Length: 162
Image (cartoon, one colour):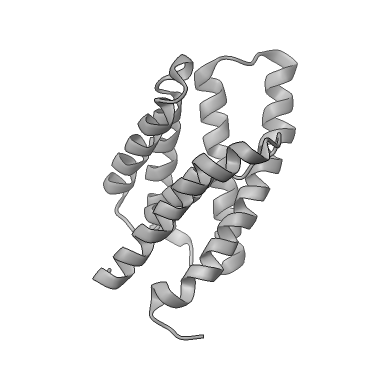
């Protein structure tokens, strides 16, 4: 990865982190886009699995610092998603927009599954409803926002002019 592309990717990650902690709380919706997962997946698909796992751990610990009652759940979920995303993307995902959308959706849903099970705050019907209804809706919204980020960042990240 060239220095220009690395700086551009770093700028997008910084913007996504700022949006996660500023815009997301203001909306207050039940189904929200997870900008941290988008940032992690943007980096994970361009990094080796170990680097993506360490970045996932760092992002997860940083987000867990704001939720001490579930300390470690976000770190575990982000680490697993970052590692799996890097490993899977290197294996069989092309630069196809539809595949990237599916990839973002699956990554967000996998994060929610691991996080909700690790926190053990929901049980029974509430957990099932969250995993079957609300988490997939949040994953679709996250994928849509992630695709917008990919479309906006693609010309500068690849060095092509539009």
